[in-house]
Image (cartoon, rainbow, N blue to C red):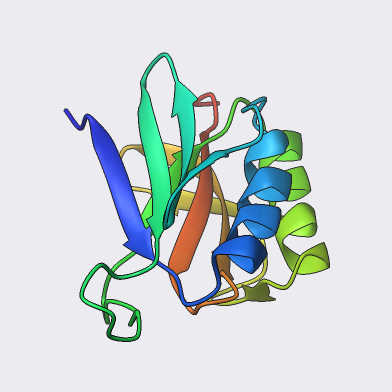
Length: 127
């Protein structure tokens, strides 16, 4: 559905370090910096962080969450641990299984160093 997702940052180097670590747990290669942005490319899409082009500070979207698909609960947990180790903060409930409308899921939520809310999600087998 999406070709790419871009979120704002106020510190490109800090954001790149954070997302290199977090996305690395998902098998994504380190990002590439292009002027005021960093890009992480995969076969299914592109994630990017950018200093705002208008020169104003980046702000977070209240009510916004960006979710990353994980292959396992262990991968989601590693994603969360890498995020915390690189300046992210836990938000919502602690990482763990939840019962969703579409079946069981494993969720782990973080705020990145700029305050953007992100989530690791693994859809667990129905048991």
